[in-house]
Image (cartoon, rainbow, N blue to C red; front, side, top):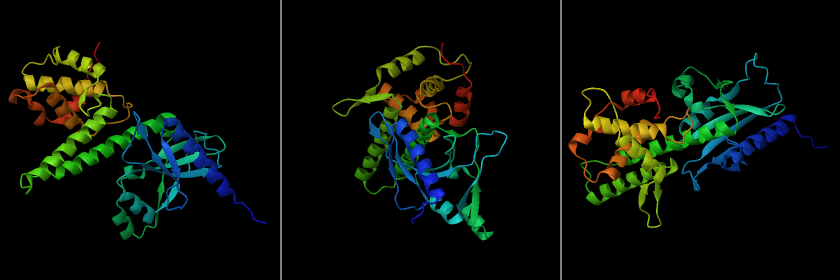
Length: 301
C-alpha cells in the first residue's frame, strides 16, 4: 500500500496557506512543480498592472507548536549551493516558516543575511541556518509590505541599469536618447504605482489631482524657516516632503535613494519647463542627510 509521508502533508498544507495569503494581497501565484528550492512564484499587482519582477517563495511547514513566545522559532537549514543560487537572482527571495497547527507563519529574506558565500565555501561550510524573528510575522499586511519592497527595489535596479548605459562617449546619439527615454518611462511607471501621476489615453503623464493639490500646498508655503537656505534647497525640501509624507507605501518600506532622486527631479521637470540654476540644488545636496532630516519633520497640519 502506498503511504503518504507526514512531511508531504505538512508541506502542502503550508504552501496552500501561504499561497492564500498572497492571493488575498492581490497577487497571482503559480506553484512550482519541479522543486529547485522554491515553492511559489508570486506575481504582485498594483493599480491593475502586474509588477515586472516576481517574488520567489520557499515554504517550510512545521507541525511544531510555534506560538509560545518564550520559545525560539525553529531555524531552517539551507544548503550553501542554494544560497549561492539565490544570491544570483535579481528578484527577491523569501522563506516562510508556517505553523500548520496554529495557522500562522513568519518570514525571512536570505538576501538580508550578512553572508559571503565564497568565504563560507572556503571554510568548508555546506549549510547555513536561517533564523526567524517573531517581529516578522507573515500575513496579508506584511505580504503587502514585501510587495512594495520588491517593487521599489526592482525599480531601483532597473533605473541603475538604464542610467549606467548612458555615457557621454556613446557612439550613437540615437541609442543614448533611447536609453534616456526608457529611464524616464521606468520612473513614470513607479510614480504611477505610487499614485503621483496618471497616464491619459494618449499616453501622456500628468499629476494626479490629489497629489497636485498636496504639491501645490507645499510649494506655496514656506518650505523652511531656517536662515540661509537657498530657494533651490527650499523647493527640493518641499518636493521631498510631499513624496515621503504622501506615499502610499507602508511605514516599514523605504524608497531607494536613486528612485527618490529621479522622482523628485521629474516632478521639478513636470512643474517647471525650464529649470533655473537656482532651483537645481537637489542635484548637489546630500540626499541621505536630507531624507533623515525630513523623516523627523512633523507632518503638515
